[in-house]
Length: 484
Image 1 (cartoon, rainbow, N blue to C red):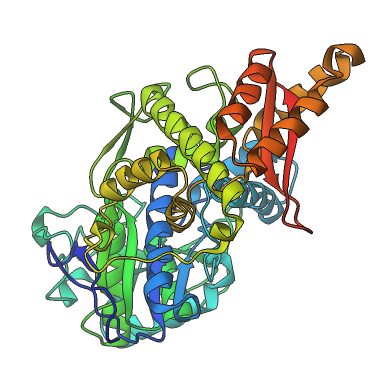
Image 2: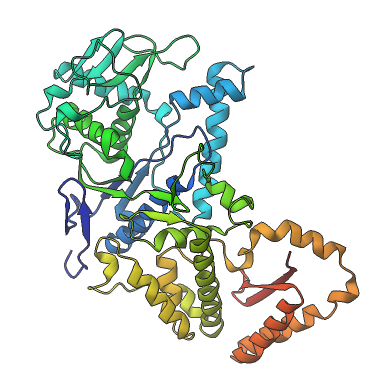
C-alpha cells in the first residue's frame, strides 16, 4: 500500500531481517502455537502471548483491523493431559476426566491472557475439534509417499523430503526423534515422527482408517493453521524451543501434504525466560504460573498487576532471553504507576485524548523487528510532559495502561480493602468523600499541584484513590478504598 511504513521482521528461516510483504494485504494471516492445557500457563507461555499480541496490534494498525487474521491454537489432547486427568478425576470416564481438566485450564488461560492485555485472536481452535482435518492431511501424506504405517502407527518419512531440516538447519543424521515417543525399531529413520498412534482402552481415541487412535503432536498445528489460514500464510510464531522438532515437523507435514514450497513465509521465535537467573522448572522450585503472579503472593511476597507483567516482558527485545525477577517487576510497576498518573492528568485536561488516533512514524523503531525499547523510553518522555496527549494513544497501542482500567488497577487488593473498610468506624472516614470531591474539582480546574497534595495526604492515611470516567457521561469519577 502506497505511503505505508515499512515493517521489517527477523525470519528464523532465512536468519535475516527483511521487509514484510504479505501474500494478500487485505488478509494478513498469522498463526502462533498456543498452550497445551494440562496445567495453568506459566510465565514462559506468557511471553509469546504478549510478543505476538504486540505484532497483532501492529499489523492491525498498518493494514486495518478487518484485514488481519490471527489464529492461536489450544492443544487439548496430549499424554500429559491424560495423566493429569487420571490423577485428578479417577472416578470419571477418561474422556469426561480429560474434558474436566482442559475446560478448567483453558478458561484460566483465557482469563490470564486477558489480564495481560492481550487481544483475543481471531480464531482459537482446539485440537480435538480438528481431528477430521488431521486425518485428511495424514491420508494425503500417505498417498504422496511421505508417510507409512508401521506397528499400528502412521509415521512421517523424513527421508522423503530433501529439504527436511531447513528451519533448524540440523543435518538429518544429527536429529533426534521428532515426537513425544521413544525411538522404535519400526521406524525407517530415527528422525521419523508420529502422525497417528493407537490408543489403549485408558487413552482418548478417535476412529480412523488406521484404527482407534489419537494424533501426534505436530499434525495438530498443520491441520488447524490450514483450516483457518490456508495452505501458505504470512507469519508463524512461537517460542524458541519450538523450532525443533515442532515447527520443523509442521513444515514437513504441510509442504508435503499440500505440495507447496512453504508453510509460512516468515517464522518468528521469542527467546527463553529464566527466573532469577535460573532455568524455570518444577524440580528447581521456581516454576511460576501467570496465576501465581496475579492471584498469590508467592513471587516477591506480593501480587502483581497484569499490565506490570506485560511491561516486564516488553522491556527486553522479544528475541533476547529474559531474566524474570522481582527487581524487574518492581521496575515495571514503578513505570506503570508513573505513566498512569500522567495519563490521568492528560485525560483530565484533555478528555478528547482518550480517542486520539495513534500515529506511527515512518522511521519508528517499532517497525524494526518490534524494537520496543525506544518506544518505552518515549513513554517516559511523554509522561514527563504531562499535558501531551500522545501518551494516551501510544500506551493504548502497546496494550499498556488500559489492561485493568484505572478504576480497578489494584483489583487484587479489592476484597481485603472492602473488608477493612467495613470494619472501620464511620467517623474515621467521614471527611474522605469531601476531600475526594475537592480534589476532583481541582483537577477540572487544572490545579494539579494542589490536587496531588490532597491525594498524597489521603495516601498517608491509607486511602487509595482510583480515577476513571463515568461510562454514561464521560465525566471524571473517583472512587476510594482503604489500602491493605
